[in-house]
Amino acid sequence: MLFTSYRFIFFLALLFVLYYTLPRRMQWGLLLAASYFFYSFAGWGCLIFIAVTTVSAWLAALKMDNLHRAQSAYLKEHKESLTAEEKKAYKAKGKKRKLAWFLAALLLNLGILAVLKYTNFAIANLNELFRLFGSQKQLSFANLLLPMGISFYLFQTVGYVTDIYRGKYPPEKNLFKFALFVSFFPQLVQGPISRFDDLAPALLRPHPFDSRTVTFGLERILWGYFKKLVVADRLLVAVNTIIRNPQDYDGIFVLLGMFFYALELYADFTGGIDITIGIAQTLGIPLKENFIRPYFSKSIEEYWRRWHITMGTWFRDYLFYPVSVSKPMLAISKKSRALFGPDIGKRIPVYLATLLTWFTTGLWHGASWNFILWGVLNGVIIILSQECTPLYARFHSRFKAEGTPGWRLFQVARTFWLMSALRTLDCYRDVPLTFRMLGTIFTDFSLTPLLDGSLGTLGLTSADFAVTTAGCLVMLFVGLSQRSGPVREKLAARPAYQRYGAVFLLAFAVLVFGAYGVGYDASQFIYNQF
Amino acid sequence: MTFDELLAILEDLHSEIDFRTAMALIDDKILDSFDIVTIITEINSDYGITIPAGEIVPENFNSAQALYRLVQRLDDDI
Image (cartoon, rainbow over all chains, first blue to last red; front, top):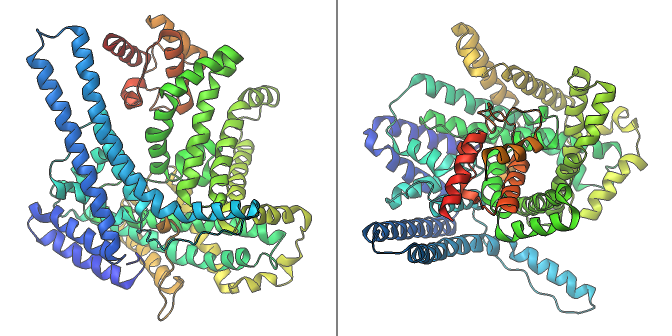
């Protein structure tokens, strides 16, 4: 059931009415039923996978907590009789048993993800190796189900199990309440990736109807539909034409495709998140923001602090930090200091952890070398910019450009194009083709296609281009306006005719300029496939 | 490990910051994830104190004082 389908709108309207008319103590139960009902449209098999993840994580968390409690009680009871050594040995034994439950939950759930998402990628690579060594042997691909949004709900669950292992908060004893945290339908398909201690209390407390919150939520939903239907789905047509016909569209078209894809992905993903956060807000549930005007970033590091924020912080907290401070990495740190001196030596473990984190981020985005290379290149650029810091400092002390509007604009444009260039790896079917097409920007560059009517062959009419340009300008205007405070707050402070006039115009734009006609069902959100 | 030794590690990373008075090192984005890992590896390398990943939370890294309290607690646990 796509967010952009009529069926979803009907489902949402019905849920909304029931949510605010039923007794408040039943609200979370209703949300759980609605979430499973929503997810059942992805297929019954998907329900089995999400149920297995839910029950295994819930059980492992309870077991870890029980072990912790039993250990504390034992140590308290035998406080006087045990020596320090005995206490230490007992603690170590308890830690091992806790670790066993933690690893079991991790292996089961990440194993499910690995098998479903990466088996065919592994088979394809093995077949390539067979061919390389002259063998005729070829393995056939497995027909596996990849449940919708599996990466998102699994990451949420793995985060929960890790937090319980670390003793960050007590586990949820009620299986159904925990199941709601895993399956909460607005964020099930494309995030944001929430933390249990943030989301669960908001999901489980009663929510009286609040007209201001509901209005804000509805406005946000409408804004999301505008981005998705007016801008993203229109640009999608031109992007697909360019990337699916590389023999016809090279040179300037690759550059144009990069630009269109950057705008499409932004409108699609942030539009989807606007709808998600808006729906949750109408239900009185605040979700974490996932984007803070990422295309205004002045460096790639800053970009990743502002784009898909909950994914970035997840990888930081549950992969980058644990790997960086793990025993093997600390040992590498000591060795590298001895070998290369403290200055270089201290950077080596950080950089190794960075590359591993970005490799995994790439792999998470998709089972292909394109995504892996995309991830690793992100890591390499971050490391290079870190290494170039003294060079930048020398440049700025000489040219005094830092902080000037011209320099800031240059930084924003540089980051935008750098990220757009890296993102072409999302588009073309393999790595060699991607680099070949990027190369044509320099070898076959000509502005003629922009003037000779070739733009008309991309599948968009002049009216489509006009609507898309207007839509992008509206997004830019809203982005600029957000820098001085939330736009909806500003709108709410204006006279009613201005506020509702703006809402009416937005709704009108979605209905009239949305990229659909009779029988049209909007395309799936890009991030649903992850 | 003394408080002054911890200050020396921090000042080596950001000489422009007065770590005796700064109270929002994470919230104000003075320390990033690279800095945090560098601090942890320095403390481990020079003083043998291991800061586990679960302790990397803003409350423990927002000020030199908070970080020092964490280091002392972990040192006592050894």
